[in-house]
Amino acid sequence: MDYLELKITCREEFREILIAELSEIGYDSFLETEEGFDTYSEIDSFDREAFDEIIHRYQEAAAISLKENRVQKTNWNEEWEKNYDPIAVDDLVYVRASFHPSQEGFQHEIVINPKMSFGTGHHATTFQMLRLQGRIDHKGKRVLDVGSGTGILAIMAHLLGADEVQAFDIDDWCVDNGNENFALNSLPIQMGLGTIRSVQPKGPFDIILANINKNVLLDELEIYASLLKEGGYLLLSGFYTEDIQDLTDHCKSLDLDLLSQESKDNWAALVMKKS
Image (cartoon, rainbow, N blue to C red; front, side, top):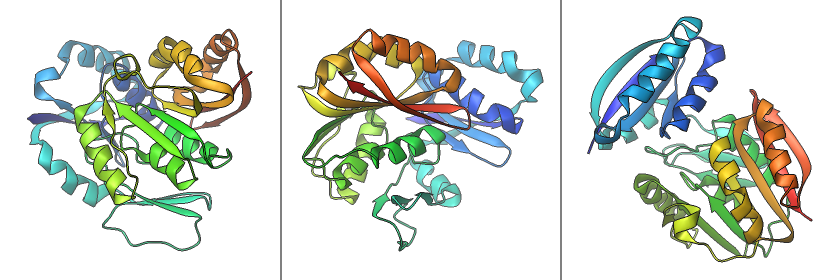
């Protein structure tokens, strides 16, 4: 399967906004660059009309320019090796690719070869989710990672001592990549393929992780609540700080109380607890 590579140049302050907008119409593979970002879509599923509408809407304000290329899926690994740098989340975890050396001074280390999956720790939402996970006791817990992407949050849960971790994603490429990353980090599970409704994970869970986007979260919050133990934790991200009220209002109706919230680069992350 060939991919359409879109190299987008834009003003710095619009980069995260454009990534969020494109993620809403099905894009889940982004590579940030000095000038903007690159995004990828399967040729057969590329929604030209929706893409053009977003670009037109922000064209002038964000000073957008773009280049299109047709690339093979197998070329993605080389692109990551050129552009992917390790990241550190405080002293909690060091996230690196297999071609980077280990680094001392961290409680944990995660090896991620991201390929065409989203969720390497570089994005503010993933970074915050990892940090919040480090503040919650995972030992002996059952954990569900919704929309797992590269599997990075599921791997973090395993490293923090979770007794059982389940993960799934709607993209078969993410599932393949996630399973490779699970093997790299000695996580003995297989990622499922599908939505939460089709996968039908069996609760209850002590911790649910959902780093997706606002619309999906609002649509699925009732399911998360039904799968969560009383006193269990729900960690949410993938939305802007201005969306916090909408999410917390919906959570309140499901007996999910806000324990803490954080933001980074205008992206929000919440910790909810089931009362």
